[in-house]
Image (cartoon, rainbow, N blue to C red; front, side, top):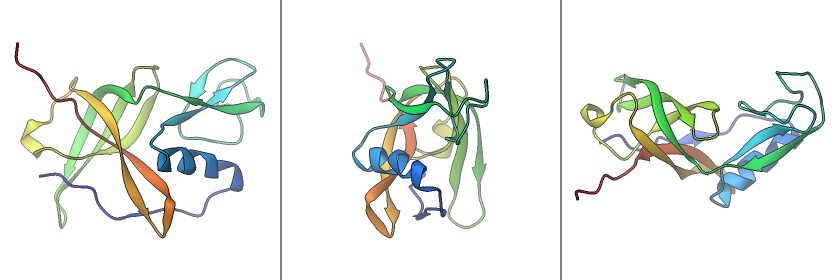
Amino acid sequence: MLNARTFKLPDAPQWLEEFWLAAGRGELVLRHCRACDRLHHYPRGICPWCSSADLGWQACAGTGVVETFSIVRHGEPYALAYVRLDEGVSVLTNLIGCEPEELSIGQPVRVVFEPAEGRTDFAVPCFTPVERTVS
C-alpha cells in the first residue's frame, strides 16, 4: 500500500503561507493571476504567463486524472505523479491509498490532505484514486 510519507515543509515566503493554511483547512487552492485570468502551480510571486504580480488564490475542485507517475522503491515505496486537475493545471504530487499496481495513466483521482510535520495548521495535498462504483 502506498502510504503518505512524513512531509517536512520547506522554508517559504510569507505570501505562500495561505497555500499551506488552506490545505490545513482541507481546501486546495491555486495561484490565480487577476491580470490574465489564468491559474498556475507551483505558486510563485509573479505570473508565469504575463509576469503580473497581481495575484490571488482560487479554490479548485481537487479532482483530476493521473498524467504520469513513477513508483520510487528506495526504502518504503511511494508514488510521485503529475496530476492534471479539472481546472487544467498540472501539479506534481504524491499518490497514496492504493497499491502500486492499481495505478494507471488517465486514472481519476481526488485530493486528500496529509499532516505537515511541525505545523498542526498546515497540511500537504496528496491524491488518491477515486473509488469506482459497480453498476
